[in-house]
Structures are given as structure tokens and as C-alpha cells.
Image (tube, rainbow, N blue to C red; front, side, top):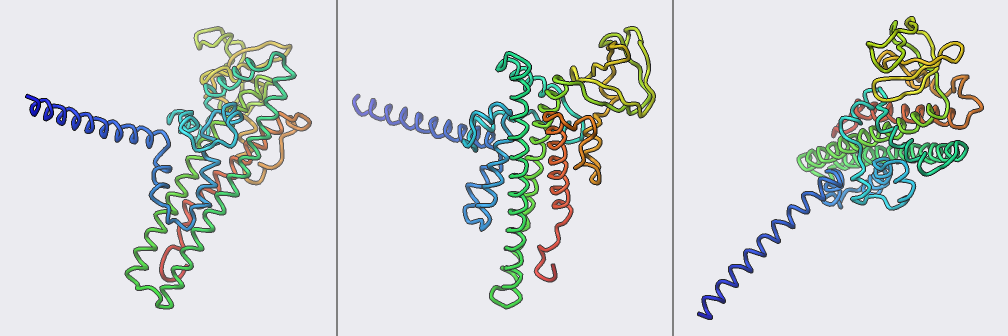
Length: 331
């Protein structure tokens, strides 16, 4: 009998061990999914000669993966599960990357600013401070991205020189160059993810900017101005294509616009483009703030944010297209 009970305990212990191991694997899977494939890959890429540069870029990625106010509180504690768990949805970041502001996220940030600050002056100071912090982080991310790509190309150049001098066989050199190119592609993919999250922050800051002071919008086509946020409501007026109107986003569908004599109405968001964002997309104009922004630290700071974001996106796009230099000959 004692032998039977002992065997049963062994079976139960083994089952618990198996369940514990399975749960452990499941927990690791969840952790990896939360901290992104990039973090999991980093664990296995400890021999990467550019690991320090990649870690530097990832630290900025962790900052932008957080909501703005969360990022400000956590500060240097980047790379944690909590930080990564505050990612915006894939749908939101995809919409932002496509160039349109998704104001749902921005409304959440503005609500947090309102809750934290009782009066308009303190809200303005909060937003101004957050803009300055984000702009500094974009500069840091840009520098880290450039340094990582430089390291990767220098790594490829050293390998090419070794192969040419016969210090490594062509077969082994080919395999190593393929690995370097794969890591380069991962570096660019990391840059794209960071760019999408920078866009989320930009949407937050621009939405707050509009709540503090309506901003110039430009009509994409001729459009109607409605009395309420309903296409069945009365039409107060109409705007021709290319017209400029002062407005503030209400949600993803509607912008509240200001008309002559202080009247207000509503225009479908899809019929408007934010003037500052349109200027920021233009390389030759993006570093000159529009007249409406001059003298306003919030508006000017947001325009600078949009310009820096556009520069970062352009650099990632160039890196994505410029894949030369990862061949054993030439480059």
C-alpha cells in the first residue's frame, strides 16, 4: 500500500512538474508577446557587435511605446512589461502612419491633462513640458537610429575587407553577410515601429494643442458645415476646396470649426487636413513654422514635433530602400 501511495505521489509530482513547466512556457510566451519579438530576439543576439547601439535605440522605442504621461512618470525605467503593455492598438498606429491623426488616443491624453491640472494655465504648462520632452526624445531616437545603421554598415565593410584579404572563406563570409543584412532589416523594422509610436504621441500633443486653441485646417475638397455632428442636421454653410478654416478635432469623425461672427459648426474630419501637418510633410517647408504658430510655445512646439517626426520617418524610409553595402564585392 505504501508503495502504491509513493508511486501515486510520484505521478502527481510529475504531473505538477509538467503543468508547472507548461505554465512556465506559457508565461514566457505571454512575456515575449508583451515585450515584442524585438526584445526576445535581443536575448538571443548577445553576440551582435552592434548590440549597444541597438539597445540605445530600443530604449527610445520603449519610451514612445508608453502613453505620454506614463512615460514621464516612469522616465528611465524603460524596457519593462508595463511600458510595452501601454502600446496603442495596431489599428491606431497604422492609421497614424498613413498620415491621418486618430484623435481617440489624443482625447485620452487631454483628459489626463485636465484631470491632473485644474486651470487652463497649468494645462498649458503641462502640454508645453510634454512637447519639449517628446521633441528631445525624437532627437535622441534619430541619433540612435543613425548610429545603429552606421555600426551595421561598418560591420559589413569589415567583413568584406576580411573576405577580400582571404582571412575568411567566401562561403563563411557569405553566411555572415546574410546574417548582418538580416539584422539590418530588423533594425529598420524597429525604426518603423518607433516611428508609428512617435506618431501616436504627436496625435496626443496636437489634439491637446487644438483644445487649447483651435488650429488652421485646409479643406481637401468642397464640403458642408453642419449645425451638429450629424450629416442629417442643417447645413450652415459650405467651404470650397483649399479653403482654410479654424477648427478643433472633436473625435475621429468630426472637427468643430469657427465661422464668422463667432458662430460654430461641424465638418467631417475626412474632408479636412491639418495645415501644420501638411506643411511638415513638405521637406522644403517643414522647418519653418506657419505664421499662426509664431509666438505660441505650444503651437510652435507641436509643429516642431511634427517636423522632427517627418524627418525620422524619412530616414527610416531611406534606410529601407538603401540596402546596398551588404554584398561581398563592391558597396
